[in-house]
Image (cartoon, rainbow, N blue to C red; front, side):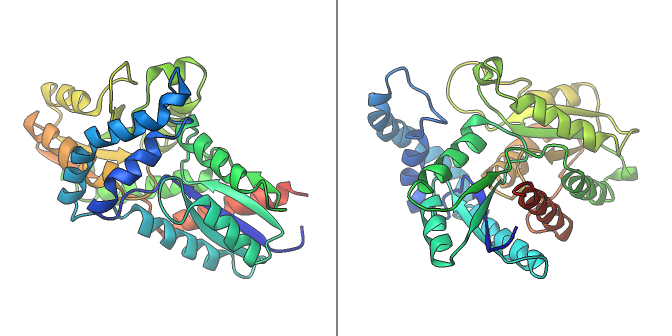
Length: 319
C-alpha cells in the first residue's frame, strides 16, 4: 500500500488539572456508548447533574496524585515513540485522539488532512474490547472521518498479541525481582464494568481472561487471580471486587501480592490512585505484608515494538 498512513492512538484521556474534572465528567456521562439511558433525551441533564455529584471524588483522587492524571501526556509520548519506531518502514504519521479530552478525534482528523494522509489505522489503547471504551472511541473517530476522504482500518482488540503479552510479562518479571524470594501472588486487576454488558454479549471479560492466561503461562509456578476495580454507580458489576479479593488473600495468609493492572497500558488514576493507594491500603489492612504493582507499559521499548507490529499488520490488511 503506497501513500502516507495516519495511525490514531485512541484513549479515553483524563483531566490533567483539577479544573478540568467536571467538564471531563460531563463529556464522559453524555456518551451514549458508555452510559445508556432508557430516555436518551435526558442524557444532557443526567450528565450535568451526575458530574456534579462525582466531581469531588475524582478531584480527591487527582489531588492525591499531585493534581492531575499523567494519561494524556503519556498517550502523546506513546504517539511520538511509535512514529519514531515506524520511521524507515513506511510513511507514517501518528496522532493521539482522546475521547473526553484534547486532542480529540476531530482534531486528529484535521491534522491528518493537513498532513495529506491517504489511509488511517485506528489503534485503541485498550487491549481488550469493551463497547464503552473501544467501541465509543472507534465510533467517535468514524464520526469525525465522515467528512474526510480517509479510509480507516480498525484494530478492535489485541488481548493475546505476542509482543503485548511479552511486554506485560516483562514488567511482571522485573517487579518480582523486588518481592521476597522473587515470588508473589499475581493479582490481575481490570477496570470494572456492569455485568449486564457482559451478559448481553460484550467480550470484555473473555478478552481479559485471555490476556491473564497468556501472561500466566510464563509464570506457571505462581498463584494468580483476577479481580475488577474502579467500579462506580449502582447495579451489579463484574466480580470479584479488587478490595474484596485482597481481603480474601489476606485471610488465607498470602504474604506477598503483586498487582498487575491488565486493562491499563498507561499510568492513570486507575493505576496511580485506585491500585497504588486504595488497593494497597486494603491489602495491608488485610494482613498482606508486601504489596507492589507491576509498572504500566507506558512507552517501554518492547511495548512500542508491539504497537508497531499491530500497525504493520493492519497496514498489510489493506492489500
